[in-house]
Image (cartoon, rainbow, N blue to C red; front, top):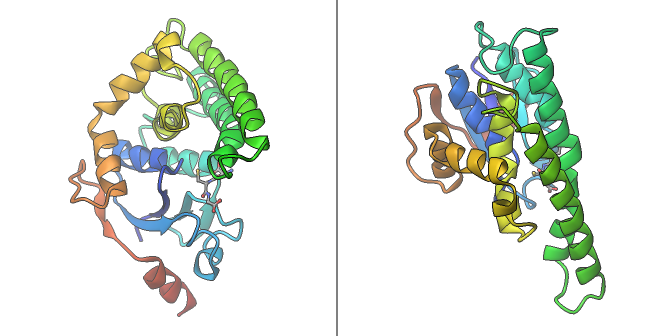
Length: 233
Ligand SMILES: N[C@@H](CCC(=O)N[C@@H](CS)C(=O)NCC(=O)O)C(=O)O
């Protein structure tokens, strides 16, 4: 069985896992999950009891959650290890370090901004959370800018699962008006370069529910109801 990725819309960090699947060239299917209605519902809790996307039903029928675990699983499926390098090598360590920073040091800095986004306009906590979120997203962006010194990609000379994950979360900077990307020219250049990548264009089309033509690995869409029904059978 080919892997099945559960991706969340709108604006999910799971976008990066779609990009990684396209880059990997492996066959796969996709299941769309509406956030927060479906992520917090009974059906999806059978897939990931934490109620978060991405989730992956692997080729052996195991359910996997957490972006880093999923991205590493996808990278390991490529015998040439093009998206991560060999475990224990300096290249692998650089990719893993960049991915860990994005997942644990960058993405959580947006939490106050997401919270502020859904608050009443006149809630006194709103400007406090907004200022706090902007400060910390800005600091994390400065650290990514430093990481990119002398590198074409987050992990070094070659694109990797860290860059794939980056595509899904860097867009939050603009969406949440968190910081000025123009003040971090290396981050901005990488973001712009990736926007032109066919896998990124494909992932946008998938999120938009449009007909999407990928590199060949995409085998089609499955509904959450169908997957959960089949798991229960
Ligand atoms: N630690 C998880 C967090 C994933 C996560 O926060 N996913 C969000 C979208 S980016 C989600 O599914 N939210 C749905 C909800 O909270 O209802 C990971 O890194 O994969």
